[in-house]
Length: 255
Ligand code: BGC
Image (cartoon, rainbow, N blue to C red; front, side, top):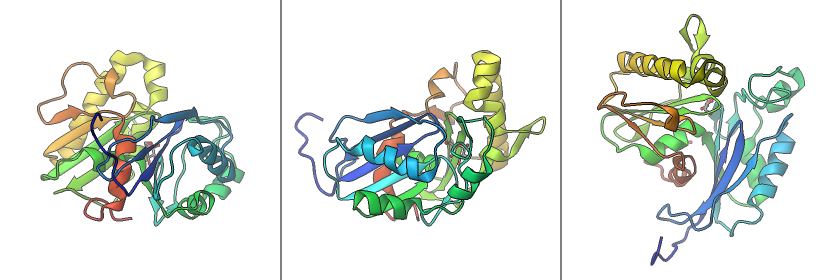
């Protein structure tokens, strides 16, 4: 931002994805103070490798006072409850390895990152973090992220509601949202049919929650054709990083 003098505290914001790992440093106003660094997620990816890969990714970034990380699975109190991509041998949708399931179960990701990076660290679900960056704080707002998996986060008057894992909830023909509108499905059926399914999914969420507004982000949001209604908007994928600062703002996310 030209003319903007970066203000402390600085937050190292990490967006952990099934396909890529991204990070940047944000100042107190949420402005990025360094270009985003990105690397592909490689498999198999046990927790120790994830920590090594993240440490290498963020090494060139300027120093920060604290760390926020968004994780593509269920997280509670910094512990990983589910890691749908990282329990697979070769990446999203491939064979699940019992050894990896064991290693990721209740893994203290916040503790491990804090120990490795030497800074206080908070970790939350990626859609929750992305959502915190985009909601306006008015009424019931739903944030859906369309990427490798399908993320969802509900906010009421700006406060995150307890996370519900819709990604693995049956949606059409016994298939889950992940299976019907995740990236593997889009690649398999093509953008046109995938668009139809996304419309159906948004209509289902509308009927389920009577959301006041729905935001759609994630790498595949740009593949949506036309409008999904005046109560639905597309948001920039950068929110996955920008929301990192909100993890430290108690009014948005309780961790
Ligand atoms: C996970 C969610 C996550 C979403 C987006 C799904 O596979 O189960 O927890 O938010 O992907 O990454």
